[in-house]
Length: 483
Image 1: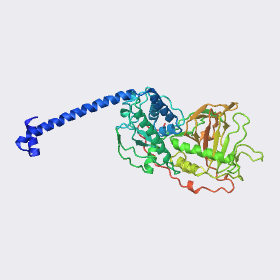
Image 2 (image 1 turned 90 degrees about the horizontal axis):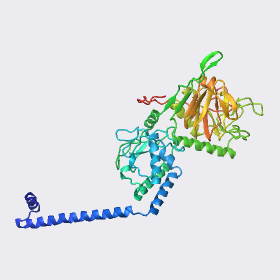
Image 3 (image 1 turned 90 degrees about the vertical axis):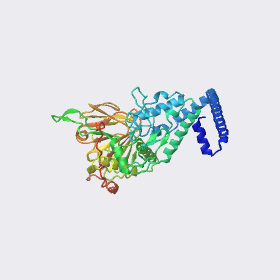
Image 4 (image 1 turned 45 degrees about the vertical axis):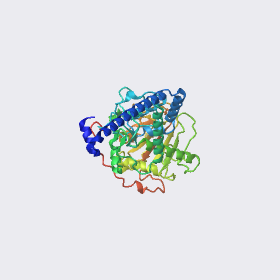
């Protein structure tokens, strides 16, 4: 030991000169003991690694089976993918699959979501990914986030690639526990019946193993964040000659996307099924629920009407098509009133045309809607919300019927799940529209406002739907302008 150290020890312990040698020897012995302890710990660690690497195959197989069961667990996939951008959702799905198969995930290390900010966090917490559909495989150009899993727009701490070893049963157990924790958390956070969804939080900041407290966003802040993600398409074109004039017969059509999150769509679908059950049990008014016998392809779809009873064709009593003046149906339920307020507040429908009625169509495979123009007992514009599955809707001045459920038209518009199609102008009054036989089950909810002169007897306006104010639209960000 150096002289300076010896002198320091002398002063620190206030020792006599003859005692300095003893102190130095004791310190040397302590250092030797520490070295021996480190060597023993290293040896123990090597033994532990050898024992870990020699785990029997049966235990590893059991762990993989457990991970696979987690992947297939009901509701887990939908919960994990809700409100993630497509890149992040694809990565989550890929990691879950690799977790089940035991594949090493280290090759993904270092990649970030294409929407990541400077901290590597995804900034698209309000994006909608349909958890009920099988997501496409991750391609070579897909970027992925490695620092978060978003839940209703929030960022939460998760197990990172740096501390996850796919061959380590403890690592798999930690991932399994995290999935269980998130699933329980999702079940506990019931979505309220309010007009604007609640539960979104500011992202805060997340570092490796450290999560700073997140600030609860206000209703206005959550709404502005959601409004930034809206997309609207208005560029539909189909030139046809009508009464000797060349017109764009689909002018006025608008397709709005991002208005309803996956969780909100699920609530609407569950509500429809609840009313279907009530209708079959005759717990609704007679004309509210209709389930005709399917006597041929495309005939017999289920309908549920609220606000007014609409007659598609002259019925057995001689009533012509249109709103039946003396027939009563059930009023709009609360969830549909909230949906109407969302449509008006988010500029999908104008305040001059707040819907007071709706009709729900439940399509089974092969069901369709033949070419028609909506009756003028309903004012323009009106809109249709598509749920469960995507389908195409045809438009044209002269749609042709080829066969049961088969039609031909100049314009075919895909209706993505959760999208809202607004019909007005030529698109509502000049062009006919039809829905060919759908390939799988689909639900549509069409919201319309009745002509004040056509409202049924005893109809009372809903005060809750009066005076809805449009939200202030945020300025579009660069690269995110409407279509």
